[in-house]
Amino acid sequence: MDLGISGRTAIVCGSSSGIGHACARALAAAGVSVIINGRREAPLADAAKAIAEHTGNAVQAIVADVATAEGRATLLAACHDPDILINNAAGPPVGSWRDFDETAWYDALRISMISPIELTRSVLDAMIARRWGRIVNITSSATKAPLPMLGLSNGARSGLTGYVAGLAREVAAFGVTINNLLPGKIETDRLRSYARAVVGNGDLSAAIDVIASEIPAGRVGRPEEMGAYCAFLASEHAGFVTGQY
Image 1 (cartoon, helix red, strand yellow):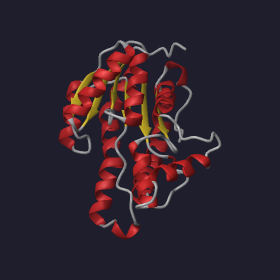
Image 2 (cartoon, rainbow, N blue to C red):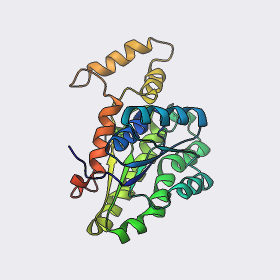
Image 3 (tube, one colour):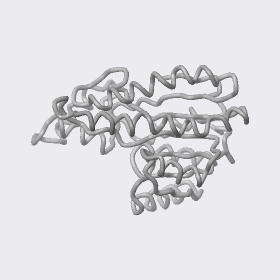
């Protein structure tokens, strides 16, 4: 399917690996000029090379920590007016509620709620003026079905979900959509860290097999499946889809 977004520009945060990388690759394959982002130079360079080899389209790599104002400024300096913004970051730490002190909560909110809100605020007016824009937040299925050991993520990402649900309704008339993509059990480092927290010193592979057995498809999802879904939400065909989570 021609997604109708060839020639558009996109920022994809947290895209050196996992779901973010898959989203960037899917957009690049659709002809989008993609800026990928991560905190570490070497993995990001490897990601840029892999996307170029897979799609035939080069991407620009910007090393920056978007959980900070300075990092967001660095990223936006490379592309201050994207047509598409994909907000994504590694989730807050997995662990017991007993371990989540005030500092941990502020860190979680900064990474998983404030950062995407601030990036959205920075690009939204230009999208409104252009009367076209797509914003997709990669959050978690735990915002709908909270999981044990994910208290920080459950809370911070639910806050983001609530915020953008209202905002999406304010900007829809201007051709701008804002949606949330809620990955479930996807084959990523995040899934492995969650399974490790649950089983402790137990068999990690067996724990993931148990998780897979509880999914109707009988397997965990693949990052590229999330990437394809994200690319559709960013496409010309999804102009009537907004505020979804």
